[in-house]
Amino acid sequence: MRSFLSLAILFCLTCCGNTAFAAEATRPNLVVVFIDDMGWADLSCFGNTAASTPHIDRLAAEGLRFTQFYVNSPICSPSRCALTTGQYPQRWRIESYLSNRAENERRGIAQWLDPAAPVLARILKQHGYATGHFGKWHLGGQRDVGEAPLITEYGFDESLTNFEGLGPRLLGLCDAHNGRPIRRHALGSDKLGRGPVIWYDRSQLTAGFAGAAWQFMEKAAADGQPCYINVWPDDVHSPYFPPEAKRGDGSKRRLYHGVLETMDGQLGELFDRIRNSPTLRDNTLIVLCSDNGHEPGAGSAGPLRGAKTTLYEGGVRSPLIVWGPGLMGAEAVGRCDDSSFFAAFDLVPSLLSVAGVAGPDDVEFDGEDISGALLGRQSTSRQTPLFWRRPPDRKSWPAMGLPEQRDLAMREGDWKFLCDFDGSRQELYNLAQDPGESQNIAAKHSDLVTKLTAKLLAWHEQMLQ
Image (cartoon, rainbow, N blue to C red; front, top):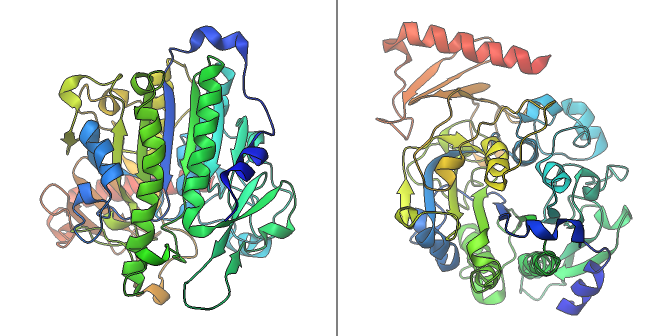
């Protein structure tokens, strides 16, 4: 593995300091940790007894846990699009994972996120924040799509990504510890150019991203700038390559738990540095969640039905932890919020509110400001329904044993409703009584089903325009 000095050399490409904003150092630093393919019940603090995640658990013990938090898609790129823009990903034609050019065209999706989209980082940068992205991007610049915008064209001062983006990147060296040669995992990224590449032990990638993020935070603090940072690890996305000591019996689930535990330790180093910094501890908000549900056979959604790519709870509900000892009241510490219902795109206007930044006048977010819930001041839920549309290439996923699913879904209050594009095959669940979506009660509530069908199909039609 390359030394951390290599990262330092790679990462000292630009200077994020701006003394014009030195007076704004008291504005909160914002760190968003967006974990790839981690199931709702995979963290110890969410009930996993087969793996241990003490560093993330400590964040929860010192902060807040939310059990009714959602992402806006059950698959990678659209989920990231929503968290980035504060809008439904369908508005930007990102409805499944971005792949090679031909595959994107076949599925009718964009090759990359339109730079004209509203981007949280860009808005914060315009108001004096230093902005950095560290980890997986997957909003353009993957496979053979080498002309996509650089991550820094979306409002980030600096970036360090993996094979799913352009600019400086760490590409994985995969060691299965079975005597076979170490293989490279790049999916063509090493041939695209558009930024320096360092080959890096895949089991240590999160350490590389977290280390670069810390350097960025230190520099911003020294320059008197508040910072907004993405730390988006992809360890728990297959293929799984934990260190040899974490391989266990080599089964898929054990390998998954091995990379999960390793990632927890590497993120823990970043969390400890923030916690132990007099400058940052009381003025930093960390938000940690997953981009979608678990891959079948690896992670777990506990009692929830479904997994990655499905519109059931196990595909779109995510664990959420928020930490900010200097920004939360003492009564919030260690609390579990089981009632606040909101989603990833709500984080955009909410984090702007925490930062004291007004959204642009010409942007209408689909997300709503639920900053009171994030800071533990009150339980707060979305005022409007939450809608989903399945990825166009995931009507079913036979390779993972997932049967044909419904096309559309929504949640309004405690009601979860699913149907197909033509309004048929309706499913209705009361999540307060049936969180596992095991009892379809659509036949018992025909009037409600009629109303929900109309709302869901109207949203679907709006997203087609």
